[in-house]
Length: 402
Image 1: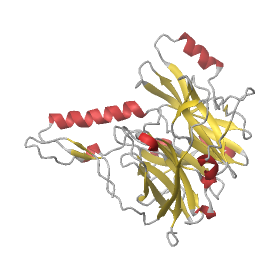
Image 2: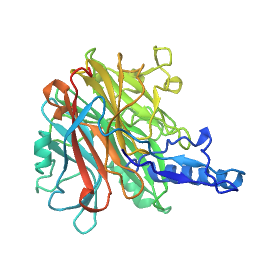
Image 3: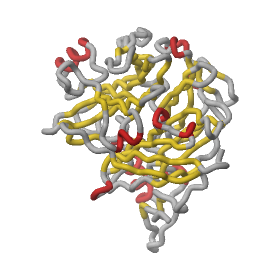
Image 4: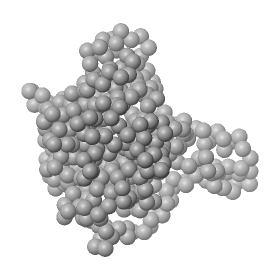
């Protein structure tokens, strides 16, 4: 059984009591570009309110789980070797091609400490990843290069700034259709402090062929931000996406509405129209598809990674989700791709981090085997000792779980 971790806040007689409902966990995961300020603000708010109120509280950060999931079992858990030349990395997001997975790291560090952003590597199988066989997208010199870059105008604006801020781009996921990769990214104004980040908006870039760079589209609908689909106040598409049997791309986003509150919803679009903001429709609470993303219905709340898809073995639409508070990976199922998802079912425990949260928790559909019966999920943990690193877990569904 997994040990429950708690944040204990005590009442006057030193007896712990539960936190009230508003302090339900829901801040952003560590590897999100908006993570640190959201998590810090949320924890500070909980501590402050508890301190000012008469009773304290016990905030449960984990739940006990049985040793084996009723859905199946872990058949392999490896730590992906850090490639030569890299000093550090975290958890990747990915684009899933029919025969391989393109893993993308928003943040990595080369030897010597220099940052490397939005670099990608193709992975042909789970076994290959466990052997460290990653095929990085490189420049002519053979050195990994960013898949996406700032425009000349953005670089000039950064040079002219005097406020200590800089433009950063963070690929958050996407889908593949007819050999082309469609990646969504967030544009962020970062700095001057480590926790200072302002979301400028969501954009789309396209990889015309595997191995090429991701070219940013120019919708031109946002004033002063021609590369963005939506501005910072719009609906983010920052979790994951896939193309369903009906031909639509279903794209998920979780809006950070408040401390500990990240409602997730789905949008859909014809893949060839993905660069047109007006072509998107958003899942409403009543099952209808709406033009206004501001009225999208919340399907569930999740601060960690969300990987939507269809599992042929289960015969259901699925969403693999990372529970950052429990350090677990869970599964939600539905009969439709954009709504009606069941409550999460626990699949397996991640190795608990030494501090903060696990990173990632993304399912890689291209690495599944046995017709989807065995899936592959990656996550990063900063656990102490030999368990620290990027884990790739293969989970096999039990016969009859479909």
